[in-house]
Image (tube, rainbow, N blue to C red; front, side, top):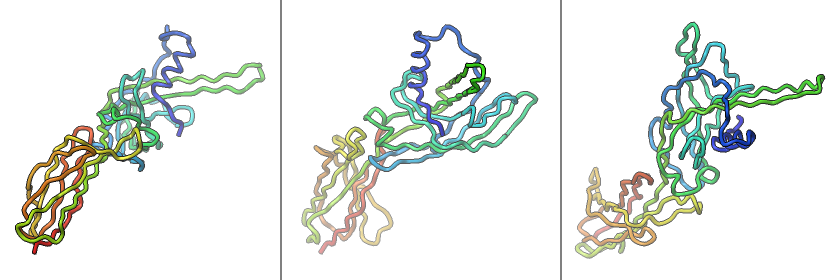
Length: 277
């Protein structure tokens, strides 16, 4: 599928005119849109390497005589942050939508569509500011090309229309939590030191970095028990370090649980079983 960059497309159009804004606009297509839903309304969590593909659904209504064939014209959806004319970042759906007609009138057709949007942190995400709520947009483009040079004239014209604020999607950094209780085994009544670390994806460096100053809950599940119980709250230090002490009372497993923030996804560590003798 042909790719469109929202900000680049608008800036390029203005640059070609040599004006700050066009003096007159060509007629835009009479398209209307329903809400664009991304990832079923759930946050999108992205790490440092793996691309994440999520579903996108939307509906739109078009004039009966406007057929979108994805050859001469295109209709795709995108996520963006910043203003519509000068985006700070934008990510476009990368698959041709599958659309079904849901309603018709004498003059209009309404379609319900599903597509896929892939976010590759190495290509699409650049700064901590990308961990935020993005807006959804619809992009319509059409191209008319005449390469018949029998009259010593050829032409290529492209039109672009963008509709913004059609929905939202929250992007979050993936987090990681580790745990290690020592010594193992331990004598009953002795002190256990439970260490670990809280880190999260850094899209600037492509690595995981410590997440300092965040509350993480130490939990314990006794051997044979059905569920974990909260023991205490620990605040992550330099490099995301976690450390606290507890009295060893019975066999069981310890883990750290991070509830997440608006920019960083929740995460629970694997369990560390301690044998108490």
